[in-house]
Image (spheres, rainbow, N blue to C red):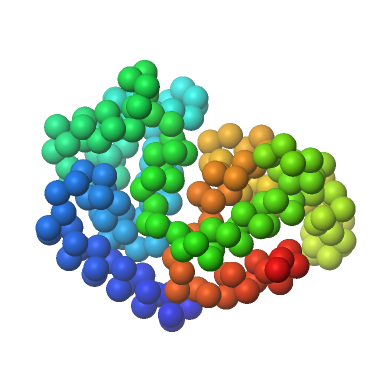
Length: 205
């Protein structure tokens, strides 16, 4: 835990230094999030989730501006509007929530990305690009889960809880696609044990 705290402090200090010379609005927003530590982007995600009044997993300009303001982002209105327009690729007047947050995340190492993709392919038994409860049967053994053992959860509840940990924060429908799984895994590569843990848990090469 001490290493994680130190990593957060170093990240915050580096982000603040880079902010002073940053001119790109998207990079500036990313750095302002990272200046709050590894949970910065996650907190922004929660803020935007609250702002999405109609729960359609997209943000219009009004929701976007209010989310930035409530999160305390220091950015000129013109820069925020320019940033919004960069994400609104089809000029529909709204941006996709998950894609926006995924773009904000720091780059993920190829090694980490590959091990996540391997795990996804192993779980996706039907090869349709979506992980469901049916895919998990025969791959994920619930019998060792403590809440299954004590009778608190059924097999389906264990599966659903597992999927929820990777599912979109907006719509927990029991289905996970690769881009969402990549987006829900912490991108910081100082924790090499993540790769070791994934390979061990899913018996990956």
